[in-house]
Length: 275
Image 1: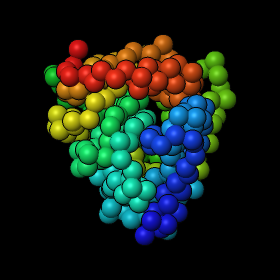
Image 2 (image 1 turned 90 degrees about the vertical axis):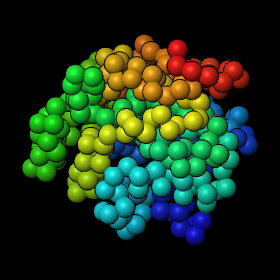
Image 3 (image 1 turned 30 degrees about the vertical axis):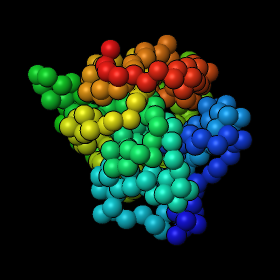
């Protein structure tokens, strides 16, 4: 069973330390996106990278449209990996929707996780006026899904620069676009539905694991207001506004990302309330 999960999720383990630090991807990405960040932790931690079923070099034959119709299926992937490797005191680092997937996993098995590091998290992308602005109207999100279905390559070319938002570094946008295009369009569309129409606002108060929220500047996918909302709802959290722009600081600004993660991990004072 353990080997099946290791193969299914293309789990890679490196590093000289004992405490596990588990990196989780965002939508349309695979574990290679963490390469500039993860390697910096190999000296002190057991570094674990993986791909969600249906992305990267995971076992696509293991994809189950019913299991992955919502984020709970992806959270179960995280739990399965932790159980297969018998991981304890896990430092979970998640990007974008990967943040919420990790938060959901921590609600199910909080005893496995020591800290959560949430990079660009959003519990709900839909606007719910007047009290919550997720950044998108239902019509906008349905338009994105429709574009994926009609012209997936065109959607990737449109969406990648929006997500990256570092126009002076076109190579990053190209990498993200290639990552999108490497995913099976049918699986990508279902993951998009699970991601963009999720509403996990009610789950945030159930998270008991101390958390760091890394909020990028000029992030059109997960805005400053959304980051503040997550911080207010997560009782044991620290909010950090990064200089990095866009939605993928682990690609565009790895050094700053590493610095904030290390500062949080080196701070032995566990946050006891939103500040």
